[in-house]
Every structure is written in structure tokens, then in C-alpha cells.
Length: 424
Image (tube, rainbow, N blue to C red; front, side, top):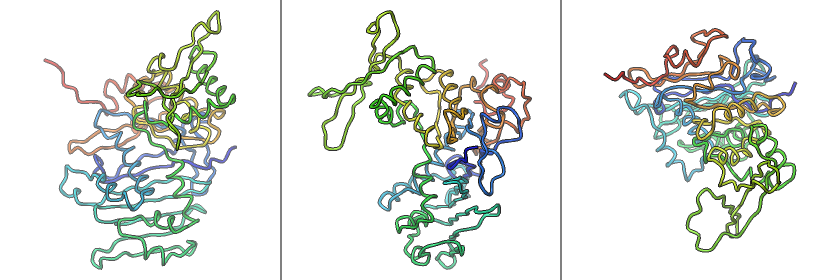
């Protein structure tokens, strides 16, 4: 069996936006036999003896906190990858829980467990507006794990306490001395050429993708790159046909952008360094009696077709490279059947050989289908009476395998619905 090299295990967040108390979700699979081979995989890494999920869905009312899960992980990613120049701006985005006096000036805390290059890590930090309050990294070379480094701020002395594992390599004394209070040690050590910490940094840099607007968030250049070669065009065409689009060919041409152009709605413009912008024209050939009968430019297609096609190269890239992908409101401009099609690609060992993972938020109850998702692949978000977001798995309610999850959810059996008042 393929040994997954990069994956998400779990995520925790505390005192960030709508999360007052520590909330978490996990990608570890339960002991359900349903869709085990398709929807889960064996990580085959030390410190992890459970199978992991290939996808996970968050449901909840508007403002319930499900999008804040993505925003919390994005904030953590941005902080790890931040340069000294944009740290102050990033700190201003750290919004603590505002509805309780005791949390407004307390640090926000983030922790993620993941696998990079076949090794499990637990990495986390707590940050306030003034400084990094604590930071830690655990590496699992065996089932117990070892703290490579720990850092904590002592308010009485106004200084940091540092602990390093004997297995930590590099100029630890120098690196800790030059690390600024508002900078993560992980980020500082990478800038000073720590090779041991590079896999941790690269997981945030290369293996974690978070999309908040599925219409425009993906890199359409990846689709254009695939169109450059016959193999890439055939791959795109094959997936379009598998998804039910009635086309038999894709053509690409480039033209100089017309002079005095102010706005071109829906047109794809390619900008290369040192070169003038180029107008990209993509034509989809629809089968008919004559090969030229129905050649429609992409902009003439429906909005859903355009969104699907423009983003298809990015979806293929995620699957081919084993990326952890988060998508907010996955149903934007796409029919539920197309969403199911994409989710099923993550559940296919043929299309997802490197065990890429998809985590998404949705309002589409049609995706609550036990033929598509296992019970442990569905999580819910709701707010309590104090405005604190709470995350919980559907398995908390122990639904039967033959239950209609959609009907039960819509009648409020699992909570996480908007509190709409009856009209009188």
C-alpha cells in the first residue's frame, strides 16, 4: 500500500474569532466498515495507529463558526510564513473572542498535527498582540514522540524559557537569542537555514491550500499550463467528460489584448513578467453532426461550467501532489452532482494516489449522503448562548447506517441549523 507522505491529522484552536474555548476536529477515522477502502487510508507512520479520512465536511448555520475553522488555520499558516515586514499587519488580524471580558486580552492558541515526508509532527503556538507567549514542536520518530523545542514567556522575568531536545540539530543558542518576541522560532530558524525544521515549514508552505471563494480562489494558470500539452488537454477533457459535460475537444489560442481595453468580463488575461498581457481564448467543442457545429468560447458557457473548467487544473494538481485542501462553501456556482463528482475523486485511489485530503464547509444538505460520506466525515458547528462556537462530530448522535441524514438534519435532529422563527 502507498505510504502517504503528507497529510492532516487534527487541528485545535482557542480564543480566536468565535472560538472562546478550545475546539478541535480530527481526520482520524472511526471503526466503521462502510467505505473504508475508498474514503479512508492507512497513514503508515510512527505515532499514528489509526486510518485517516480523505475528506471531511462541516455543516452549520450562517455565523456558526464553520468558516472560522478555515480562518484560524489560515491565520496559523500566514503567521508561520510571514516576513518581518508584514508581521504587524498580520497581528492586527488576530481577533480574540470579544463576547467575554476575560478573553479579550488573552492569547490565541493554535495547534496542528500533521505528517510531512512520512514523519508525524505536532506543532503549535499561542500569540498575543505583544508577543509569542509559547511555542512547541513534537516529532514522532517512535510512538512516544519527543519535544524538539519548547518556548514559553515568563511575565515575572520578562524573558523566555527555552527547552531543546538532544536530538535537535543546529545553532539552537544563537537562533533562540536572535528570535524576536513577535516572531515564531520556527520561522526564524528557517531563515537561518535550519534543515531539520524545513519539513515542518514546507508543510505550511506547499501542502496546505485554503480557498474562501471557490469561484475565483484557485490558480487558473494551472489549467492553462495543462492546456499547453496534448497530455494535459486530454486529462482535462477526460475529467470534463466524466463529469457529464457533452464536449469532445478543447482548443486554446492567444491573442494580443485589444488596445484601450478597460474591462473584459469573464475573459482570461495572462500576464507574464516583462511581457504585455495576453488575451486567452478557450473553446469547448460540443459533439454534433459536424465538428464545427457547436464551438463555444468558454465565456459563452454557463457560469457553473466556467467555474468548473477554470478550477479543474487546480483540482488535478491537488490530487496529483497529495495536498491538504480546505474549501469554504464548496457549492458556490456548482451543481451538487458536480461537487459529488469532485469529492469522489478524492475517494478514488486511481485519481488520488497520494491521499490528498479535502475539508470543506457547505450548506448543501444533498451532500449528506451515506453513499458519498461516512458518518465520521461529517462535523457540525453551532453557537451556544454566549456566542461561543462549538464543533462536534455527527457520530455524537450515533445515527444508523441506514438513516436519512439529510432529513434528520433538516428537522433539527443534529442541531447546527439557523434559529428561524415561525411567522405568525
